[in-house]
Image (cartoon, rainbow, N blue to C red; front, side):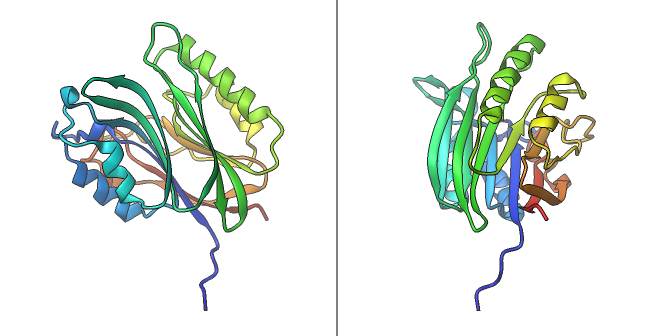
Length: 235
């Protein structure tokens, strides 16, 4: 008899280009953490394949093998020696894949991955992003993100990523209102002694968080801790 699925494990992790607390690039260390989490869906930020920035392998290709299934990549920076950006990996088929450019003038390029995951509970819209470091940049990006979320959707929405927001503010409250199913608030940065909840998972109407946590065993693998949540249809 097939086991009944009660929750879907969703995760987000900024892997710091594969460089751990020892200052060394180690893709196997990243893979071991992902294998321990065993997510159904995971958004990964700061994916690096540029050899000039310390990558000894193509992390986009390597990470695709860590969670075999379906993926969308958003390579925001492309140079002659590789790419840099983010990925969304899913065990479930992705029927829609779109990447929105939310880059701000004179700042590092940023994007939003927008995909429809065909989960055992039906289609879920999954948005994954990595927002910028400056206040004005984030204000612009959060406004664009809010516009996308506010669009009428025929399916529940999950928002995951690194939001680089150091404290609660009006923009965060706006996301709370748009996605009333709940949000994680675990401290994830810096990994050695987490003080700030930079990495979050929001749920829209129709989804709730059964449980969530930051993965403290990943302290040595990156400067961020992964955030993990078990999600299910709202009761």
